[in-house]
Amino acid sequence: MDRTPPADVASVFNVSNDDSDNEEAELIFAALAATIRCCDLPVTLLEDLLSAFRQDVTVNRYRRWEDLLDYSRRSANPVGRLVLRIAGYREEGLEAASDCVCTALQTTNFLQDLDGDWRRGRLYVPAEVYEPFGATEDDLKAPVLSQSWKNAVGEMASRSRRLFDEGRPVCDAVDGRLGLELRLTWLGGCRILDRLGRTGYDPRVERPSLGWSDGAPILWKAATWRLHSRASS
Image (cartoon, rainbow, N blue to C red; front, side, top):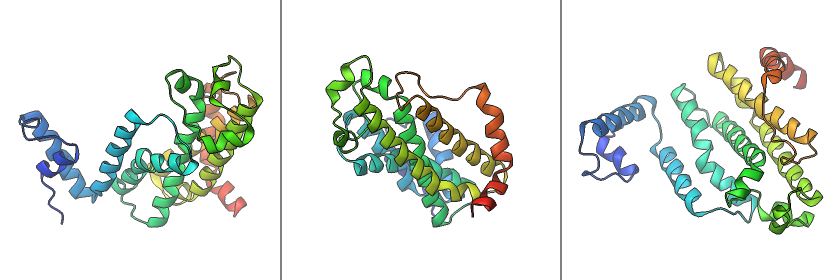
C-alpha cells in the first residue's frame, strides 16, 4: 500500500515546511494523505486540478477546441474521477465516460456565463469555433449578440451535447445514491442546453439556468432512467 506521508501531500500543493508548521495544517494534510491511501486516489488528479487553477490565472483565451478540452481535462475531469474512486469504481470505461460528462458540464457552464465572463475579460469559446461563422471578439462589445455569435454558441452547444451523450454510460452503470446524483446532474446539464436553444443560442437574452419548474420533469426522467436506457439500446 502507498504510505503517502502528509509532507509529500503538502509538497503537491507547494506548501513548505514553514507554511505547514502548525497543528491545523498537519491535521489537514494527514487526513488528505489517509484519504488518498484509503481510497487509492491518484495524486496526479490533484496535481491536474492545481495545474488548471494556475492556468486559469494567466490564460483567458483559447485558440483551439482541443486546448479547451485539455483545460477541462485538468479542471473538471479529475473531480468526476475522484468521486468514482471514492465510491469504489475503478473501470477505465466509466472514468472515460465520466470525463465526457464533466467536460460537457464545464463547456455548458462556459456558454451560460458567456456574457459575465466577457465582462471579466475572459472568453471560453475557442477561436476555431467562432471564426468560421465570421464572429469576432469586437462583436461582443455590442449590447446585442450578433447572429454569427449565436451560430458559434449553437455549435459549441452541439459539441457539449455530444459529450453528454458519450458520457451517458457512467450514469447507466453506477448504482445507488451516486447513480441517482449522476443522472440528475446529466439531465440538468442537458436541460440547460435545451433552455439555451430556446433563446436562439443567445445567453444575453436570458442566462439559461434551472428553476423550480425543472424539478419535476428532471426527477421523473431520473426515476424512469432505466426504461429510457433500454428503449434507446
